[in-house]
Length: 211
Image 1 (spheres, rainbow, N blue to C red):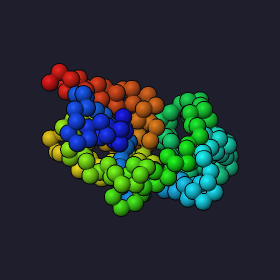
Image 2: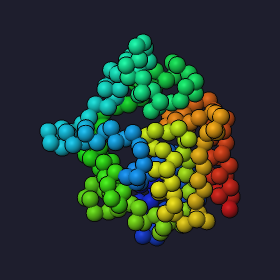
Image 3: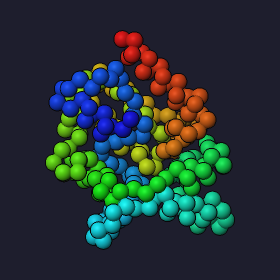
């Protein structure tokens, strides 16, 4: 689950019915981080000017993948956006890039762009700031980040985490100085995610489900 969906359910003290939640590489505020999502902002601006309804993110990624994965690696900087070296099997990595992504509604991209503005992510009306309501929830949260996540860096995750009441939040960064390292999709798709991340999540959820 991502932060916006969870906090809408717990908005204004309403009972969300949740014993606990986990968020994976998610933030409501990217303004102070070096998130590579900033690369999508020109697409949002162009879509608004040209009145484009959807952005073919999936088609664009599939078209650029050969230039990132094969010599002379002209777009090699794209691969670390998804996974660190040797974390995903090559066939799985290729399938993820070429088949996983679809078109993105331009309105959604425009809304995402507000996460890079003062106050963080807003709803489509531009008047509801999700960050302002984080402290109103009483649901325990496990917020997970990857140490080499370029899309949602640990500092971006922490910008949201620090606004949650301390007894309710557990902040965990996966990755070690000497390796292994976790990029954005390694948290859910790498074999080490099965060995390290999933058991951590299950233990957290089981603990609060039994409480």
